[in-house]
Image (tube, rainbow, N blue to C red; front, side, top):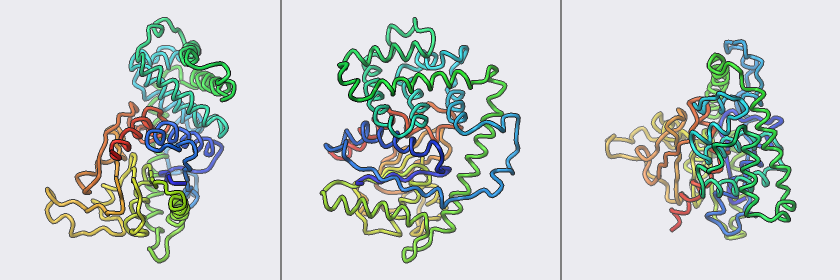
Length: 390
């Protein structure tokens, strides 16, 4: 597993966990790794799970004030919040994707649809969903605002027309072999679910729904971060979270050395902090080809001097001093979204890091979790990594 992905806060194993991992890994391979390694299909991705050692809320968030939508489930939230945050006028609940495509272009509608669909359809559809995303983005790149879009009345018709455009370049044999038919049905099912759960009075319900959802995620972020810092241990005796991630990294490093492959480490949110702590304190001699932090907080943690190697003598001069990047870290790419209040610029704190701004198009509530399941994000990320290789 020459790539190790370390998840962020708030991740817990449940009905959708395996599907999420499979979908994300498929998108990383098909859009990101495909641009940078020749054997991208066989390139292994380790996904160490540390949520089980993170914060536990013994009263199940009973301290959070409840509103009339307290019964809203996580599966519904994962659909309803991103849709309501599109800031697109939703006059017809059965034409949400159509509205996004008309207002922002075909790529934005595809990103939204795949973000909503990938987590809900299990492990077996992960690769087929990623393949469809690749073909759909090719259509969007050719015609961002297709001439057929104004005549499409609803989302089911939209998906049908998109399928027609994708199928123009694919033989029927290929489609059957790849199992894409079932994936298309998964996209249709997602569109149907959106239409059913979006409240009829959107503006009235939005703040109530979002506040509860945000409250849970922010408290979980704080809880997971505090548990990590309190229990991370030392280089001589790593804590449980660090040890789980170290095990995955050591396995990937051993495979890298056997096969002569590169080693990439990617961390989302708190995962980026854990990786930086490992590369600078727990395992400073480990050589990696690239460290990729997405929507992450290493700059904030360093400003607060929370890392194991943090030195309060730096900076002596705020305008000029930066924390040196360890030579063992080949490239460091840091991605942030201005709408993501949990992401930070790194280049003004660390030497040798390249910052990239990426607009997820999401609002304040969901920008933090909207990067990784967007096909266009993975495609842009792969291009940025490839730039650094030349």
